[in-house]
Amino acid sequence: MNDVIDWLRAVKELNASDLHLTVGKAPLIRKDGELCELDTAELTSDSCREIVLGLLTERQRAELEKELELDFALAIENVGRFRGNAHFNRGTVQAAFRLIADQVPAMMELGHRPALQDLCDLREGLILVTGVTGSGKSTTLASMVEYVSRRRSGVIVSIEDPIEYVFQHTRSIVKQRELGVDTHSFAAALRQSLRQDPDVILVSELRDLETIRTAITAAETGHLVISTLHTIDAAKTLDRLIDVFPGDQQPQIIAQLANALKAVVSQRLLPHAKNEEGRVLATEIMVMNHAIRAVLRNRKFEQIPGLMQIGTNEGMHTLDECLSDLVLEEKIKLEEAMAHARDPQVLQSRLAPAQKRRMFA
Image (tube, rainbow, N blue to C red; front, side):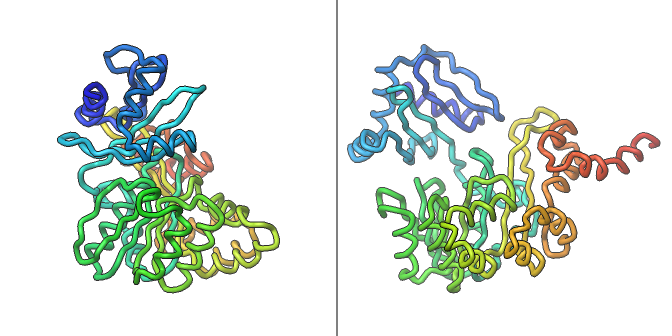
């Protein structure tokens, strides 16, 4: 047990993000996106299992043995909080741990634009934060909840798996419910939350059809609902939300989404241009307006990037616009921006005037 605490402490002290316990390797930490081994012995099947199970409660061990995977939260005194995932790999128990910051960062500190704060001032509707695993979605959600909690008097109900950031009551009261501890499922907790006088509902992830359906209904009935999806942009988010439903239900869901969905915020983390610690946030924001609702109803999602480009006054921006700004601010390298651009030619055309001015400066 002491060893794993030392490894988790190393994550904190080295300003890393993750710890991986894998059979046949020494413990690995991820720092600025790169994996590196800690200076200790390789983990065996027995040692890895003993370490992981030693961190779990009896209930959690039983759930891991039954489900073969487990999400859980871990608080280490004088070290910090971690989000853990225990799982089986070729019959062996292994685990990954993500460090949770002590304080909830402000949205501007993370690298978001003021438009995200404007979205948090909405009183109803559905806001989705999307991105791949490890793109900072949970931190963005926490930052949004903290912002809302400090600005308005109300009730915020969060449904999480597991609880990561622990919120303090400020102007709002925050009720945090953890899957497996306080509720049996996202869908059940979401349905019950509607009877708990909520103003804002946070769902850490829309995992299944029933949760998505209930979240949309909650957003339609006067609540602000904030959640995440594992999609890379607005178009794929809309496609995913619709395709999870059977074909005969999709027209109804499209109509509901057109009314309930307010915005999709997509994000990813990129290496810093100057090899500084930490990574740089790149985002795009799609805000629902009449044109995008029409695109949604007709499922012509290929038109969304163009509509976002002309929607600047409504708080929208595309990923390519954000990438070009980050290159000009010398926060990311050009080759990194080109690798992540939706349309490299558009990105290059946005950068060309600035590059030309530098040539003749």
